[in-house]
Picture (cartoon, rainbow, N blue to C red):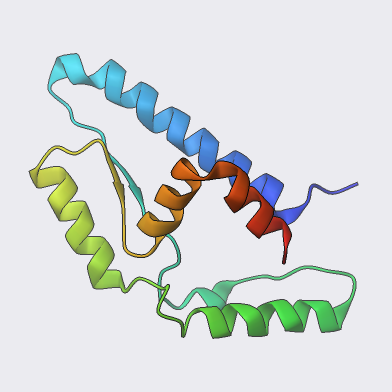
Amino acid sequence: MPLPQMTAYCASKYAVTGLTETLRLELAPQGIHVCAVHPGVINSDFLERAQFRDRNEPAVELRRQQMSEMLKSNWVSQPEDIAKAIWDAVKNKRSDVTVGPAFLAAEAYRLFPGLMQWAMQQR
């Protein structure tokens, strides 16, 4: 049985976070700074390369349409926003940066995990 979509996505995000944190600790003595940048959804050409998979073709098309609509929303960061955040993180030696509206979602989850988990299950 395949993993649910969010399970694989979240597991990979946690893996990257763990890798980043351990690299930061291991490389700091050599004067190498490591930073994690969490951009959320970025307005890019993602849909041109995206592969949506499902045995049900209408479900695939629905996902593609939902993603297309999401990319038009105010919750989407622009590539230049991400570039500025990366530059700021490097210049100011920040260890962790969440860009744009994704910051609000991350803070809401940090402050109200139970409420946010409930809200995510209401889809």
